[in-house]
Image: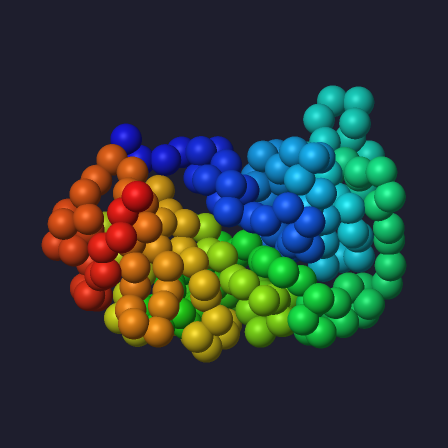
Amino acid sequence: MTLTPDQLAARVARDIEPGSFVNLGIGQPTKVADHLTPELGVVLHTENGMLGMGPAAVGDEVDPDLTNAGKVPVTELPGAAYFHHADSFAMMRGGHLDVCVMGAFQVSANGDLANWDTGKPGAIPAVGGAMDLAIGAKRVYVMMTLFAKNGSPKLVPACTYPLTGVGCVSRVYTDHAVFEITPDGVRVLETFGTSAEELRARLEIPLLIDVR
């Protein structure tokens, strides 16, 4: 079976090292927060000005003044701090984040990221802080479905959508497999409900197989 969004978020959370400073992008990546236990000491950063974000808020926990960058109500952990938006972007651009997790429309075989515009008529391009995170975070993890609704791959030889960052992606976590972008090529680390050979047949890029 392929992974559900919650299972994929849990899989991403497994690879975040204890004590890391991490930014979770808008949408599915925010689910990663629900799978990080306090004992890990992971500090979550939001680009709207917070360090120490906890899981999503539910029920009586909801405070309309306490949200992440996607305007989703969140909780705060002990020691949480708040600061100006400009200071938040200085953290992002200054190399102070160990990991960022973002969604994507496409990722190329050499780690280029496209996640802000598809050119679809009527769509409103919205890059937000993605470009700052792509160049500023020490590691960029992408969390996405491997195939678009029309069945076309989103892990591609070269991006056809406008780029967010060049050669910035470290790993790609999808519902079908986990991939690592390396100088030698795209390495398959783990598969879900499929085989590495099936992935070779469906993707238009060479794959290095290292399934564990």
